[in-house]
Image 1 (cartoon, helix red, strand yellow):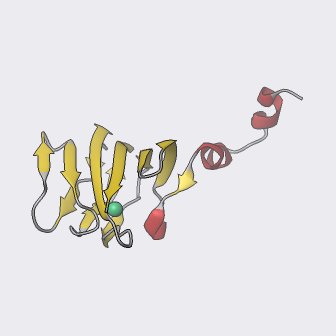
Image 2: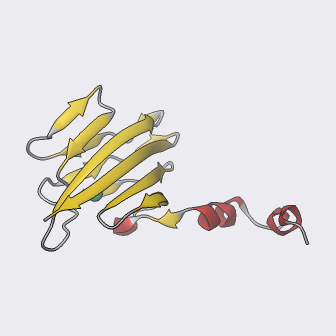
Length: 125
Ligand SMILES: [Fe+2]
């Protein structure tokens, strides 16, 4: 049986789940790991309509966590990234370099469209 025949019976949600993993915080965003190393990773994040992420930190025990988030596609409405405290670097409301282990951060609910983010993370002792 060809892949076309197998996927023909799947719903759109099943195909999405095949390619994407559920994101953290259980709030209906999706992540796809593109590359990973011993102390770094690259993810593509997908925020469909109605998804959001509440305030949180991403601590990694015994290490400093750095993350460069690049908004590839903004949602039509909603999906604004917000944080408390200082950002290490911010450009055009699309590029954010920050310490997710120290800085509480969140994504407002996407009310129309889909938001895509390329997320590059690394740790240091
Ligand atoms: Fe986070």
